[in-house]
Every structure is written in structure tokens, then in C-alpha cells.
Length: 98
Image (cartoon, rainbow, N blue to C red):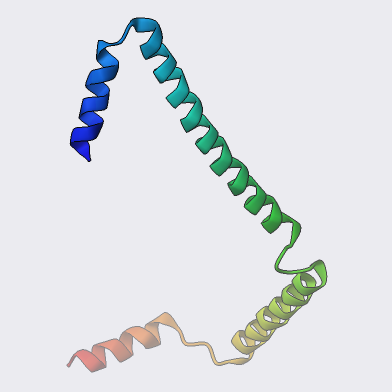
């Protein structure tokens, strides 16, 4: 296969400059059409994903209220629990090292 491509390239090199330019412009156009086609498909996929969001505003507000309730519960647990001083923790760590 590579030999055929190499032969074709050698044939094109032997042709006049205006013919070689035609080959260049043909391949530049063909490759750009492929690139633009891929770009258009990716843009359609992107816009489709933007139009159909996975969550609605109501679901987001429910999630935020649930998060707020969880944070309030944690706050209450911290305030109601017995606080341990840093000195107590250091004493306990000294005891475990021995």
C-alpha cells in the first residue's frame, strides 16, 4: 500500500506546477470538509446536552435545603457534644505512647 502511495507522489512530483497546485487545493478542501463536518456534529451534541439539563431548578432547591438541614444538624451535634480540650488529647496521647 505504501509503495502505491509513494508511486503516486512521485507521479505528482513529475507533473507541472499548476497540476500539483490542483492536487494540493483538492486535498486541502477535502480535509477541511471532514474537519468542519466533525465540528458541526460535536456542536450539535453540545447544544443537545445544553438544552436537556439533567436537573431542574426545583430539584436543585430541594438539594440545597437538604444540605442546609444536614449542616444545621451537624452544628447542633457539635454544640451539644462534650468538648474535649487539646490538653486532654495530649495527655491521652502521652499515655498511649508509653
